[in-house]
Length: 108
Length: 114
Image 1 (cartoon, rainbow over the protein chains, first blue to last red):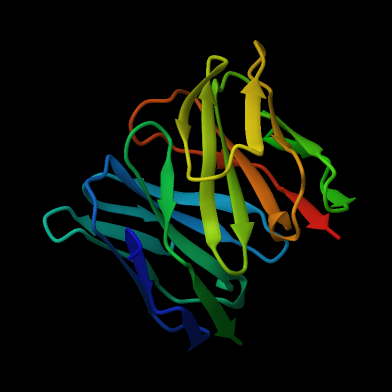
Image 2 (image 1 turned 90 degrees about the vertical axis):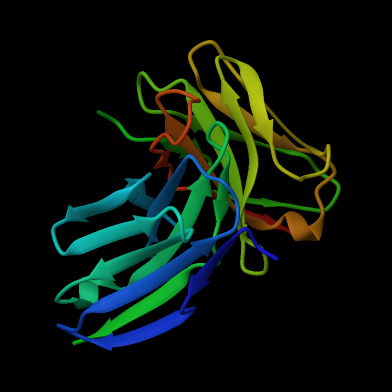
């Protein structure tokens, strides 16, 4: 069983829709990270969370430490949001455990 | 500030050869982590270096090794290449090796083993 589970694996949305990606983890963590990977491979760190909620523009990330669950929300989705979104947790040091990723396609 | 750079970006090798990949972290960052990404296994942690010392190591065979220099640049070496080593190899840098640091990823080196 993976330490980090993500759902859904694939997601197609119409432009403007509200999107939610979920992440559950089974180990103690020091932080949870949401990453974005575009075709070609480059990975960008979107959020690092240890509690509560963070917001950057149209992206919102929340974490519930007791339930070991996090969500990434995208409001007013746009085709440029199309990417793979990866949930990762860090424990000791900078060793990350990764979810399998959610492939998001936003259709104009 | 320049981002994380990785060289080479693409590499083709044959089975049995060895390969060395290089990673230059963001200026001032002292921790470098290496990851392997394959379609089947996804992203997996290889190892982390901080102040020229290996801090953490993932579950990979001894053919995978690395080192870090005094300027924080890091190299990763894979010996006796196997077909299954074909992957995107990513490095990421962060300021320190403490708990839960934000990591900044390089563009990756795509290795193909024939």
